[in-house]
Image (cartoon, rainbow over all chains, first blue to last red):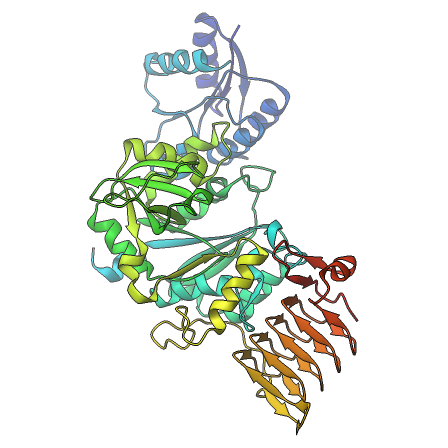
Length: 119
Length: 406
C-alpha cells in the first residue's frame, strides 16, 4: 500500500484529507508542522508528501529543503491556500504546487500521478 | 531595461571550491583559486578583476575546501563595498540548508544556494569559475545574452580540434545556437565552416534566472553528478534557447584564457607572462588586475663584482625582494624573497619569503612560500635525486611545498 504523509497544522483540514485519501486506498500519516514532518521522513519511507506552507515552528519552505536532504526523491506536493509562494524559488524543488480548493480532485489526481513514478 | 539596471539585476556566483588535486602540493594548504600567481596575485583575482572591470558588483564567492587563505585574501584585497550600497563580494561557505553533504558538483553548489537567489531576486545569473587565468568583459557577454533572448549563454573558445577532447565541446549552428554538446568527446565536432577547430566551453555561463532555478532544482532530484557540463548543458540545449558566445571574436586582442589545471599549465602560464610582450598584459590600464599588496619596500639589486652581481633578466621581481649578488633569469620572484650571492635561479617560480642560499643553483622549479634553500644546494639538475626529496612533475618541474626546507 502506498504511504502518504500529510503536513498541515489545521486539525480539521488535516483529518479531512486523511479520511479522503484513506478512502482512495492510501496509508496515511499526519504531521502538524514542518519539524514533525522532517522527523517522520527520517523514520519512514513515504511515496508522497503533502505539504502546507504556513505552519508554526517550522514552515513548509524550510521543511521542504530538509525533507529533500533526507529523501531527495520523495514526491512533494505543496498544498496551500496562498498562490504567492509560487514566486519563491524554494518551492520550485517541489513536484507540484496546488492552491487549496474545496474540491480535492486536483490533489488526488496529482498524488496518483506522482506515486506511480515512485519505486 | 537599460544597462545600468541590467547590471544591478545581475548576480555573479564564483565557484571557488576547487580542490585542485592536480596542482598538489601547491594546493596542500589552500584551494585552487587561492594559489599564488605571477608573484603578487592569487588565481581568483582574475575572475574578480574581470567582474570589477565589467561593472558587476553583486558577487557571491562559493567556497568549500581549505577556504581559510581564500577567505582572508578576499577580506583584505576585495573589501571594496558598503553592504548598504547594494554592492557586495560575499564569501559563502556551504550552508548545509538542503544537504548535510558538501557540494557534489557545480550545479549542486548553485542549488544549495538557491536561497541567495531568492533573496537577491536577480534577472540574470552569471556563473564563473574561480580557477582560470583570463581577461573577459562579462558585460559584453551579458548584452549578447539579452540580444539573443537566450535562456543560457555559454562562453566558448575556439581550440585546435586535437586538443578539444579534454573539454566540453559545443556544437552550434551558424547563428551560434547550441545544437549539441559533449563532455570530453573522443571525436570533437568542428566549428561550422572549419575542420580543425572546435568550440570548447570555458565554464562561464549566463542564465536567465528562472531557467537556472528550474534546471538545477530538477537536477537535484535526479541521480546525476550535479554538474553543469555533465548534466545541465546536455539537457537544457534540447528545449531552451542556448547560445555560444565566441570569446575570442568578442574580446579581440585581449583574449587570453587558461584553465590552470595542472602543474605544467601553471608553469606554462608563468612562461607566458615573462615573455617580452605577453597577451595577458598586466600593465593594461583599461583592464587592471587587482590584488592584495602587503607593504614592502621596492625590489633591490645589490653587489656588482665579477661572479657576484645582483642581476635579473626576463623576470618579474616583486617588491620586498632582494637580489643580493645572485643571478635570476626567466623567473618569477615573489615579495620578500632573497636571492643570495653566487646563486643562480633559472626558469623558476620562487614564492613569498623564500631565500636562496649562496652558491645554490635552481632551475625549472616551483618553490612555494617560506622555504630556505641551503648553500650549494642544486635543484632541477638531477631529477632522480630531486625525486627523493621533492615532487617532480612528469614534465620535469620540481615542486617544493610550503615551508618544506628550513
